[in-house]
Length: 381
Ligand SMILES: Cc1ncc(COP(=O)(O)O)c(C=O)c1O
Image (cartoon, rainbow, N blue to C red; front, side):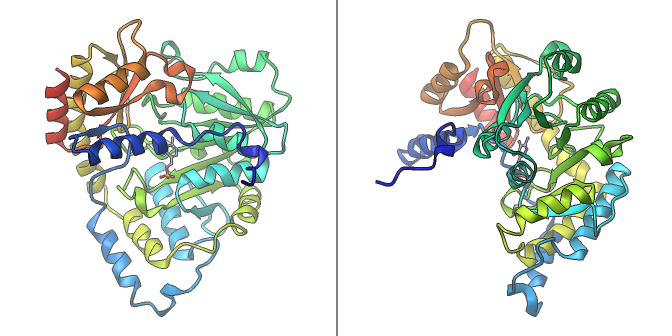
């Protein structure tokens, strides 16, 4: 057998890629598994999105390669969305690059800005892809602690004291997954000042803004952000379009040109129908957000009851499509999650997959119908 590349030495298969195989195998044996592990929205996208997709088939250019930068119409729709939702003014020809999901943006940004040996600040707990991609490009993850006692915000003073000479990039993710914490105005101001002082590219990964969040914010709205920040966003959670793979990176054209150098060598544009559907989503009225959140609100009531049944504590002011719940002392999250899967056929994510500060926590997804959540509650009560 041919050996694999050295860069894979520190990379594991994604936890959910492995675990969902196990869950699928149990299902195939007839086990009635309820999956509350992953955040794959189960609700429909806005109806007009499907019209946008279908109508694109009438366009003779639909089957051709598309622009590496997305169509001008899609970029304009993103600019309109950012203006309307965040009051951020973006130039559609300079500050917006559509992506195939925000996840790919994490790799593109890392490839565009990191050299082997560069250090990258990564939230603990946080989305595991930041660290795996950092390893893939030969840079070094440096985890920063997020703790409940500090509202899951970083302690920038301590970080600065520890020396940041080799740090080139910092990932932040507010609203934060998995905790549901949001940034304050002060935190964003402080982060931007911190990034400037230390010559760090600050990237806010922002796909959860519109889920049960009364204060949607973009870091690009804050003073000084355009010189030192990028933002990733996505239609996956906002419009229930995770499988469509539509995301975007926003920021200064200097940064976007570098990312385009990477991206244009990796794919050959996004299918036109998907772009047309995405435009329809971005142009939805405010009613969309209300209807989305009224469903999640009802679901969250039951998920809170599930967390109560497991004797967990949790923060009712947290946002997002998960409930991040602290287990009673001395319970090992991974063992407990396996036990629940084995004995009650309910799959929940252990907090440890998001880093060592997830020890003692579980993450319960709101991406399941009320009936399934009620059944899970019955099984776990
Ligand atoms: C924090 C965070 N960032 C990025 C993503 C990727 O989202 P997508 O690639 O679907 O836009 C996810 C997906 O779960 C996430 O939780």
